[in-house]
Structures are given as structure tokens and as C-alpha cells.
Image (cartoon, rainbow, N blue to C red; front, side, top):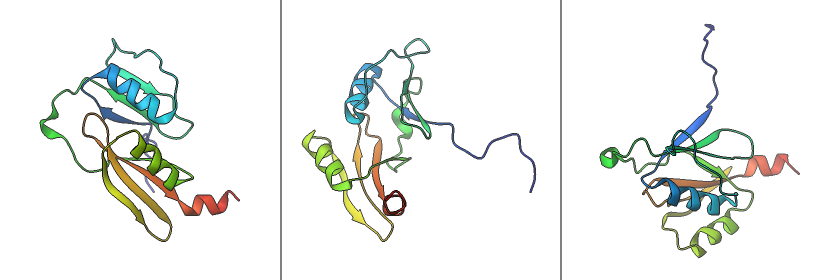
Length: 130
């Protein structure tokens, strides 16, 4: 194995947004977080995640020509059905209905900037936490 100065873990994920204030409000409400101030002259907002990989809202990349309709990451949940109802009740656009597999289940939805997001329930983690 070669030594690399680059760690084999993801430090943060960028979500490109067109309206920082609207996105801060939307993601904070979605995740039940308090609203804080953006940094870097208002172009970067760090969502205070509960451990794991950081999530950054980034309004520096306003070019939406290269939007990607593929899911880039997922939020974890211990109750997928409850999460689905929560998203649906907020009037958020569901992209794919709940898909069930042996170890995981998930669904996808869109944020206000048309980014496709996923909520995933990992049954292996649920079994290990009992």
C-alpha cells in the first residue's frame, strides 16, 4: 500500500444553491436545525450535522447548466416511513418512491434548486444498535 498525504475520508459535501437565504431556511427546517449566519461573505453555509461528513451550502457556483439529476449523497434515518411522510407533508417533490432492498431502503426528493437528495435507512445499522 502506498502512503498518501490525502486521507481516505470525505471531509464535506457541497450542495450548490442559487439563493443562500432560502436554502439555509429550507435545509434548517428539513433537518430541524437552528438558523445561523453564512460565512465567506455569505457564499458558504455550514450545516451543523450530527457527526460524520460535513455538508456545505455553496452559492459560488451559480451556473446551473451542468446540473446533475443523480443523487450525490444521502441523509440517514432510523425510520424511513416517518421520514417519507415528513417530506411529503412539507409538499416537497418526491422523485422516487420508497425502494426496499435486503439491507437498505430509500427514497429521493428535490431541494429548491432541483438537487436530488436521498433519505436512506440502513437495516444493518439498526440491527447493530439494538
